[in-house]
Length: 215
Image 1: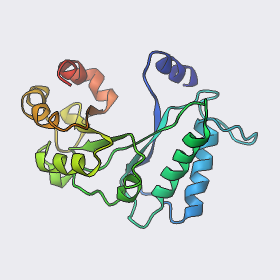
Image 2: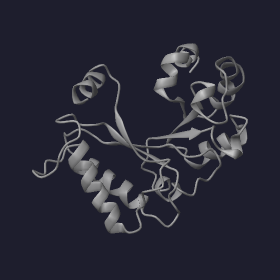
Image 3: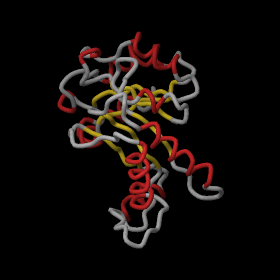
Image 4: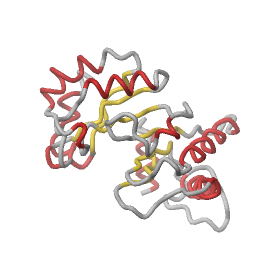
């Protein structure tokens, strides 16, 4: 896997690790737990070199961390983790930068990640217009407007499923995305692009190929 990651990076494709997910067995209840998670991430996937740490991908150094939080609460300390990751970039000098992104639910605000996003240090936000009752029909211009207005210095992406099978709700076909969604989304000065969930389904549907020239 490490060689495959380095090959992607050589071709200009950044590779990040996503934390959180659909399972319920994770939390950051204290600042100390957030700092411990930073140490684990840094030494396992990035530039750390603790001798007793087993690096999952060998000497491959990932490009960033994405917060995909399904079960966090506003009281948890993901902002502490984000700030510690940002401190690494300040200290990095000529080293490789670590990029911060988040993939929240479409309803604004997403309290699971709001405190972290409010630090202002995230480069990209991929708003999920799927698997959320607030956006069961797909893209919402009202929610998009709230996200882009709240984080004007962050690139905001339209998150959509790459096929009807990729999500329980919110699928928008490529033609509708080109005709009805992108003309609205691209009016925002901090529009960043489109995020597809996920590559497995995209390879089978060629969704990305259908929209690439319009994104």
